[in-house]
Length: 585
Image 1 (spheres, rainbow, N blue to C red):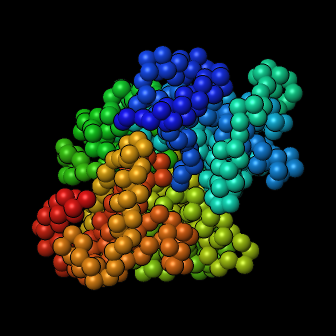
Image 2 (tube, rainbow, N blue to C red):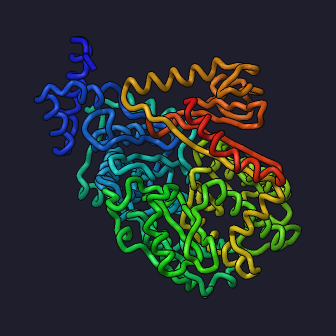
Image 3 (cartoon, rainbow, N blue to C red):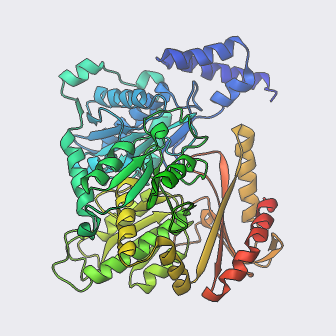
């Protein structure tokens, strides 16, 4: 794009400030080279804005500039976090973890040293750990906050910075808003610094002790509802960590219960380049291709895949008794199966009983189970929960909102207890000791679930069909449109504004709008204000539209439901419906 002289001067000033503030030679040189080459388009993209907190913290492309993630931006945000902690806590402490991505360990160390330079005690993992283990560690260590350096399932060019609060969940308002304000106001000269050796000698910087890992593993083992059924079960699990942090904990847990686990050798070791996949996301068939090939070879009973920070879990199941082919389950199908299993198990083992088995919280026998799902997750979960006597609450996208509901359920006067949380994007939680998606404990729950149905002569596919026959058939399609750069940001705002101008009775995708809810208007009291539009059509479809909180894209969630007898007709027309909706946006 052609920049005006004023724009060039503004961008050049920002670039020079960054070069002066960035200590890392690789990132500094990127910007210096762009300035020397008069690469104004590149410089504009690096500096026209700065990374902001979204639903999952700060996330961006690795590189030099304020619109990139780099040591300077990590230090800047960490200084803002430090100022917020010091203003609100008497003696704050922070636990920090990182995944296998490029520069994750470096970013984690930079965050730790800025916090230490502000007099804040930091507990830092000595090697990569999953998101759920950090969430658990924050609670176990009674830390004020936590940080995970990760970009979850995004492509290898990305990294990110998630902030957690003392409850182990990601920060929510007002914490995230205030941290962002302070971080945005930080000037380079405001950022405190200290050498690592000085921080350790002052007892400000410590490694997280192994005892925390052991406590997490004990918690996961203790969460098994039918441990005797799982321990020593003669099944085979095929697993891929997709070059990420799940490799050690998932395999350790399966080993603890004596289950054979076969791992994709080429995807076993941590590698931020993710060389065997285009996208390290277990919801991607391409990412799960190698583990499914392994499953066919070893005749696996269940296939598991975790993303780089091991908060998302993908599952595939055999299509036939010979295990010659496998079906990848969708995130919504996994959510429905897990919700159904943990609820039915509670009804059998704990409802109306006192005391309850140790896998449940005290009083779970007399309280109402609480299931929490994001509003873009299948409504089949709600139908299962309500039919089983549970309360099901919808929350905004972002597992931090599920964590909020867990905390509320633990109030002394609450008549509910947390049983299950889920997001359609392959995130599940079956344990209240963690306050974020947990692929490790969810993997163990999924293995237990498979063992249980196998003991009754059923497959997970059989049970899924029973669920559809009982509660109605649901299918969902998620698609997105990317909008990179400054022009893309403006385009996204324009598209969302167009949706907000729609009214009941208007036509959209050749269908009449029955109801439309704009969460940004503040009129929908069920949810906080959010950049989300929910559209119900007279023909029965539901469409939810929202910009991604972490990537430059708009996401579209299409929901289709049929009575048990209408499944075949819906499946027959599904491709045409989906094509129509996709071509409209």
